[in-house]
Image (tube, rainbow, N blue to C red; front, side, top):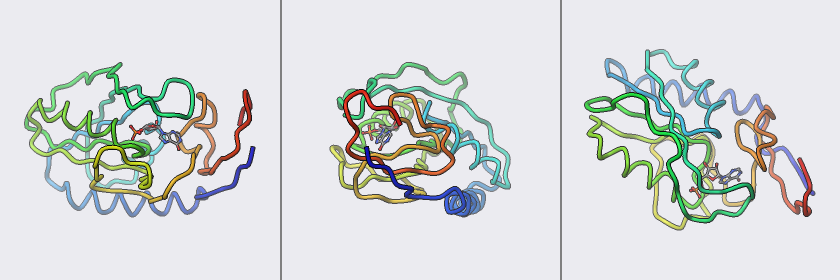
Length: 178
Ligand code: IMP
């Protein structure tokens, strides 16, 4: 397996603070609810909302599309729904990465049905080269073209979410762990 750091913790921290500043400005005096997509977004979301200068509520959904491996099936399944109503609220979905776009386009359509006042998406990473459905996030931390990344919430076989930096991994051998 090959593995190299793509974004260090310092670079990530700086970028998250910038995003938080922009989002705080945009959602001043609004009734903001931040919805994290489990599990991948939990670290990014925790850092983002603590860098924001405005209050917000939080809730989570869980969507499954990948199974246990690295290859997308393209199928999206909602395995945990919201606990609270978003009717009339300003909703910001926080996701770890946009890859094929299937997960987020499904989620946005799903949540639109519940009549939020506004609905936007903030993705930590945008992997632009692999879209299968057209999807644009409103706020993006970093853009990459392709490749498999882990750390800062992102996993491979449920491992490596706890890495503080983001790593680009390739040539993963059969049964190999990170
Ligand atoms: P999409 O539906 O293809 O956009 O995939 C979204 C989900 O796939 C993300 O929320 C991640 O959980 C997972 N994913 C996509 N690319 C990567 C990656 O490079 N590393 C880890 N997980 C990924």
